[in-house]
Structures are given as C-alpha cells and as structure tokens.
Amino acid sequence: MTTTERETTRRTTTATWVGGPTLRFTYAGLTFLTDPTFDDAPADYAGGATLHKLVGPGVPVEDLGHVDVVLLSHDQHADNLDVAGRALLPSVPTVLSTPDAAARIPGVRGLAPWEQVALGDDVRVTAVPARHGPEGAEALSGEVTGFVLEAPGERTVYVSGDNASLDVLDQVARRFDRIELAVLFVGGANVGRFGAEPLTLDAPRAAAAAALLPLATVLPVHHTDWAHFVDPLSAVQDRFAAVGASDRLVVLGRGEPTPV
Image (tube, rainbow, N blue to C red; front, side, top):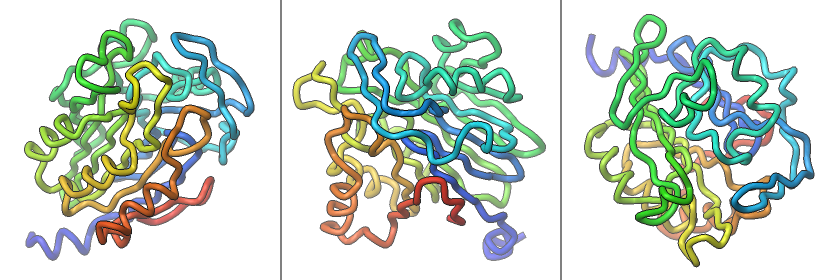
C-alpha cells in the first residue's frame, strides 16, 4: 500500500475535550481518555500545594460512554486525577501510567520511559519521558509520563502529559519523526515551587514544541479550569499567531465531539 493509499484509509479521529487535561478521543478503533478529571467545581484539593478547581467537566462521567484505555500521565496531583476520575479507573480495561502510579493504584500498568505495549489488533503505545517542571523537579513534582500512539495506516499521536521541558520533547521528536497529532498540556501551570519556571508548557514553550513537531496538528488541553494556570488559552493562540502557526492549532469546545 502506498503512502497516499494509507492516508485515504485512515479512520477519522474524533476528540472531545472534557475539561482540564481530560480528552476523550478515538484512534485505530479504540477509545482513549487522558488524565480523568470529572469532579464538580469549585473545590479545593489539599496537598503539597492547595489546588483550586474553577470549572466542572463539560461531559459528566455518567455520559462519557465506553473507554478502552486511560492514558494517565501521573496520579499524584488532583488536577490530573481527581476523586471521580480515580473512581472511573476500575471500569476501564487498560490504564497506562508511571511505575509509581502502578505501585499506588491496583490495576494500573506502569511503563518506564520508552517501554512499549501492544493494544487491540495493531495499536502500539510507547511511554515517553516528561518532566513536570525545570530540571531536578522530580523530587517535588514526582514521576510523570507522556505517550506516543502508533498503528498501521494511522497518524502517529503524541500526548505530552504534564511536561514543561523542550529538551525532553526534543528527545521524543527525534525518536518519532512522523508525529502528526500532538495533544499538548499547556497553561504554564505554576504553584510557586520553582519561581517563574512553569510545571507545564507555557505559551512560548507550546509554540516552540509545535516547531519541534513540524508535521503535527496541535490540540491544546489543560489550559483552564484551575487557578494555578498562568497562560490562558488566548495566550497560546496569540503566540501561535505570532509565529505563523495558527493553522496548526485546533481549539476544542468543551464537551463538543470534533473530528481532527
């Protein structure tokens, strides 16, 4: 089969942004969900830093529908896995996350960086590095992972997780040079642990990430809903416009299934 023939037989990816980091999307016949957060808002979550949720989910968990796979970047922060999201996990056949998350949550399969797992008939998921803050942040932020999805005849998909490092993303881009759909966790999250250094991609880093992934359509998520996000979605849009990349940015409406 030629490249053109493969492109014409690709199945459409439909993505629904639930809110925060939570995205439901179809890929190669399976339905995936990133970092489940379904608690109503407003609410405060205590921890190393108190997190304040501002907005509830665009899709209630009871209306979510079937999910085959959860891609959980990490379990230690409530803005990536809240109470309702945690309650959902036992009903999902496959939950992939970090080895630390697997040690804490029954039924979770932990993947080390670059470790791969086969799903369904032809989907391969690779865990890829992520760093939740500046170099050395792991001692405070904990272990985090991203994911790359591949399947014959399908676009290669990158899910960044809570990664703030362009150096880390460059490693991913060098290993997977045909990423055509990138789910980027943006917002420039900051709880004051590392001064001005963000915990996720801020607007300039998001645009730089897109430059490292020149073939990718970019879906920004995790840009709102919580008080600790510094860069609103509009800042990401403005930055992409400034570098002439607006046509690569797909902004999803809350709770609206969208072909991408």
